[in-house]
Every structure is written in structure tokens, then in C-alpha cells.
Length: 161
Image 1 (cartoon, rainbow, N blue to C red):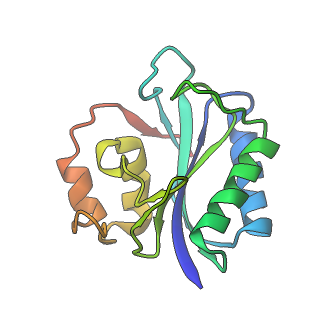
Image 2 (image 1 turned 45 degrees about the vertical axis):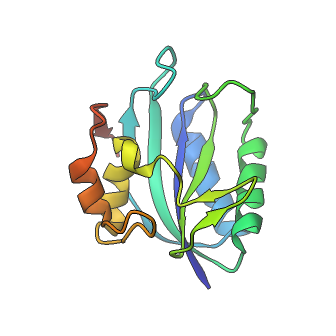
Image 3 (image 1 turned 120 degrees about the vertical axis):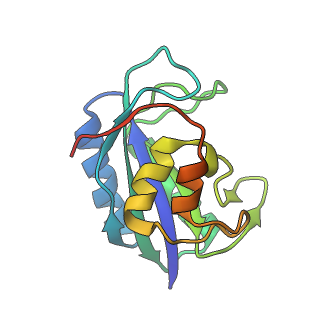
């Protein structure tokens, strides 16, 4: 079995319903959810002219290899109405990113694990600390709690549920 940490988020449509649907589909198609953070609201990151996001981090146990996991998650995003464009950081019904996969370091054309922006984003680190504060980032060799303490992102992250 493999342990993966995922962040789910969206800012388009019924955000809470989309999140719940994504969690159900992950349980059915990807693996058992072991831990869930609270649900947080934040302003958009990168492209600020759009609705606020809600985000949640989950820890799952999966039999899938990392590339298979990514493909299943992309299919779930698409099923929930996600359309990808060339422009980054746009509105979306659902975005699911793999933050960590075991303690593996993966760099392929389609997948970079650990996710390259973890250390820069409080909306990732705050819910991640909630469920994995002592997890050691395999590239930076620092705990998630330490990364949050060092993070310079000043975006407000508010727990909503």
C-alpha cells in the first residue's frame, strides 16, 4: 500500500458539493481516506480576479502507482466539470493535486512529487499541518510544521468547516 497526501480545491459552482463529490469518488476509485483536514477558504492564488477557493487536504491509502493515481484524479476532476486551459490559476470546479506519494521524489513529464509549490502556499500548509505536522518533506528535509513557520505567503486562510 502507498500513502498519498492530496489537496482538493475549487471556486466554481457549488464548492462544498463539488468537494463532497470528489471525496466520494476518491474513496470509490482511488483509495481509502485515512485523514481529512478541516475545510478552508482562501482568496485565489496567482490570478486574484476570481471567487474565493475552498480547500481540504486528505491522506489516502492506495494500491495505485503514482502515475495511475494522477490519471484517476484527473478523471475525477473532469467528471466534476473541470476544464483545463493553457492559462494557469483560473476558476475551476475541482482541482486535485498530489502533494506527496510516500516519501518518493518523482520528476516526469506529467508528474512532480513532492508538489513543487508546497512550501510557498499557506492554503496547502495549514490544512497539511493539521493532519501531518511532523511529515518530513523528502526534498527539503523539513517537517510540514517547520515549512509553515518559514512560509512567507500572507494570504489569509480561514477554516470554514
